[in-house]
Image (cartoon, rainbow, N blue to C red; front, side, top):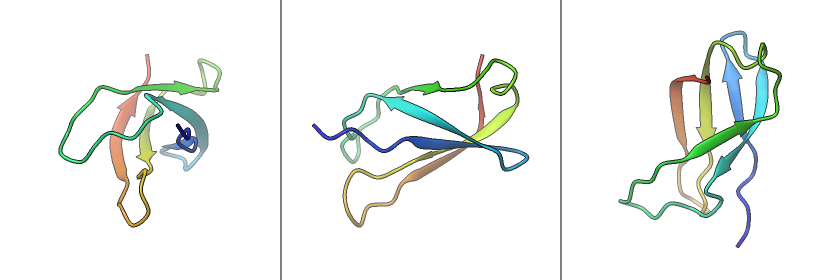
Length: 72
């Protein structure tokens, strides 16, 4: 199993925080699955609304961009 690359989480001021998305294996096309995102950030850095970019696991496949992501 090859881990996915770190997914950037981009804030409204275009600051990037690096996150790890779990599960590490790709989600098959047509399937849905719950994911967990872990950030390497202090609590005050993780406040606000972010955009999460998930990369595709296969060459030629498109990734997914999720707007409006918040962290507790």
